[in-house]
Length: 93
Image 1 (spheres, one colour):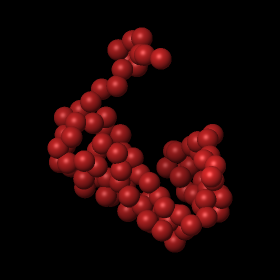
Image 2 (cartoon, helix red, strand yellow):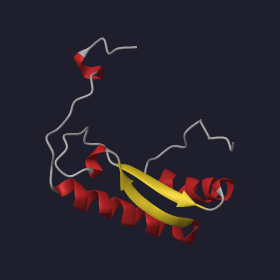
Image 3 (cartoon, rainbow, N blue to C red):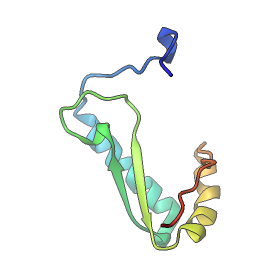
Image 4 (tube, rainbow, N blue to C red):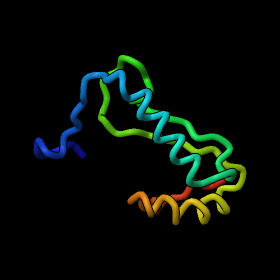
C-alpha cells in the first residue's frame, strides 16, 4: 500500500551528528531500566549510520537470553516511557 496523503509519507531528515550521542543515551537509559536481563542494548537502524539521511526515529535492540522472561520484565518499565508491546512475537525455528 502506498501513502495517499503527504502526512502519511516517510520524511527523511538530513544526517545529524547528534544522533549517535542521542542513540547511545537512549540505549544507556533502556539498559538501566531493564537491568541484567538485557545482555546488550544497541542503537540500530538508519539513525545509527553516520552521515545517512533518516527518519528521525531511534531504533534500539536489546539482546536477551530468554525472550519470554524479558518480555514480562520489560513491559512495565517500557510502558512507563510510553512504549506499548507489539502484538507480534517471533517464533523459534
